[in-house]
Image 1 (tube, helix red, strand yellow):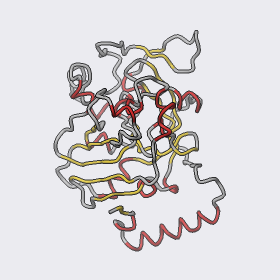
Image 2 (cartoon, rainbow, N blue to C red):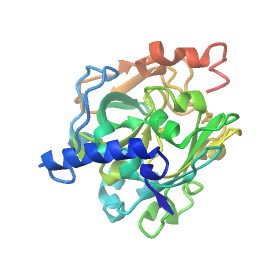
Image 3 (cartoon, rainbow, N blue to C red):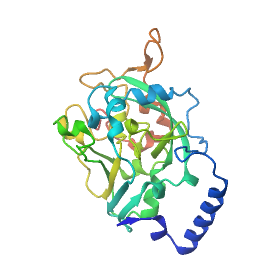
Length: 298
């Protein structure tokens, strides 16, 4: 059964929310596909990549292995209706609609750097809500330590899933303190538009201090657990991909140096720039890993 937040929040809060939505609806004139997010102090002041760059250079193996394959094939994906199962060690498990996980009045714009393990990077203006706000609504039970995420499994629309490129469905995971960090968001849009299919519509994770593959797309399941999830890449190639996947210029991937990166859109003579520890978010997140050997816990 699909749940609304009205099913899990006190009645008084729900009535207040409905009043707010009714007032907002009277003022709304933007088309249904437009989104607006409040500016955030957590955004970088770096210039974002263009919408064309962001939507035409992607890794989304469910639609193929080429960078242009997601833009070419993701149009076949049906994203409405859509619900996300939230379960495991939570007080209010159920199937929740995207509109309730990320309501319009709660959206923020977060302009984040994205660093791919393959050595390229972008700056992307996401729109979304903190994952912490969603977990707070469903009530995380004591003893939960990790969050597991799963992508949609629908090979009839995601033709890459017809081939054993990876084990399907794609799975990722975070420690609970990573998941509830203020930088961690669930995105439903970018550049004031609903999230394009090739970027992970209708709802995806964004964790800006980790390599891009940790930010799982087209989420259908979020499970709270006391066991560390085995993520897809970790299971496929454990010598190359660890659970944490923090951006770390001091620990190279077996196939790609992590010391520098190529900014998409920088041009033929743009060169490479130095990669920053935790993708430049060290002041906010380094304390999460105090005392850990990040060469072993990569």
